[in-house]
Length: 320
Length: 248
Image 1 (cartoon, one colour):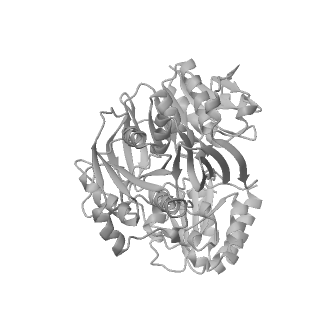
Image 2 (cartoon, each protein chain N blue to C red):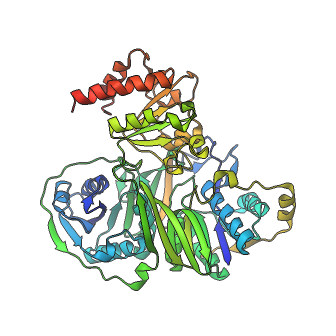
Image 3 (cartoon, each protein chain N blue to C red):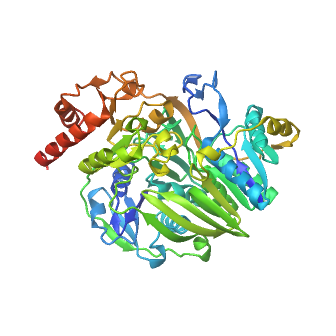
């Protein structure tokens, strides 16, 4: 029995999430084989360092842009060819798009937002976040083939040095795979996304206006972080909707979340519960965020953040 | 154009989450239920199509009689008909199968569902529904225009946006952005009165075997007290983040 992973690439290079799902699959597989499916990767050799023993290497120009239906079709064929019983995908926007399609094609139960290695493999039970991180839910998957959607940063990277054999794989694609057409992709280059970020720096209403975001962006630059915001800030149009963190916005599962001028409404706190370390900077010592944070600084953000940025720069220079 | 909007009945976003029966069931005690926020964006977009392009809008929910006030609210917002599939929602696949039957029987051109419900966060129903119907599907949809049988959609991707085109029938996993939050409709008195007279059809569920079971729930461990750092001593914060939290 093999465990199959969808290893995502961007511009031909594997994303960190690809190595994380491989690390997870290696643990789940025990001594069994981990098979990775890669789409148009320029070099698949890195996968062997995370426990992958075999790579199904797809090189196909028709798949140069992500297409949920076509990718799900290709993965379905790979799972059937390998006889895999467990499929692991990340929880990127693209994986969340294709996983339900894959589940129906394979008649497989799908558990999303999985936080850890299975609690039990028989019955197959995983811990997943629910109620936007306000609780965990232990879910049993009862089908023969099972799909696990692994939350980013939940399991981490585990090196398992080895050599992966590479096999060219040419799935048979149908016309019906391309009935949803990608016309254009508009993506900020060189900007860390909230989904991929190790560190997220977020601002709230306490920053008083969009013109004051320079210091937040500066901190994000220093830390290689993504920028985010609270709901009122995106509602007022100070920052784009895509940066809104919370129950109706994006969930954050970074290692570090720094909240500046955010008081901590219950919907916002739910969105950041999965972040490992939380820092809050706020001038109101009664702000609810202080109850949820690991570290707090009570004071004026306009004085503290520039000072903190200088100190972070010094720290980074010393620890480079 | 016939539109079906899938409505999930969920605890409101301020709800405290608790469990009963040995942490095996969600405790509904004192919880106020609302239309799932992601579905509400979709419902409002559907109302726009109704007003500007003459579409008809039905709403559907899979659940017991307790979900009817949520469907009535959708009717008060302006939906024409409501359908309740009379069975508890147990897992994403079971819900998608029930919705697929309603969608197929009704011959809808466009099915709008929220990208996920804010209770179980499965994020699987819209995609499974599309796959069962063999219809085109766009997830994380933040803009949707329909011209004849052609749809142009924008979806949010990690770090950006993607523009897609597809023919109807189409299933959408919608979210914030599909309409502005300020455009969300609040039922007025006239709408509430009219909603009482609108049809709410209860249909029997199909036999569907589930693929997943929620066995038990757990709440995150209580947090320790926050460590407050003197604003004059930010070196301490950096030291703690580096040496204690190993976060930088």
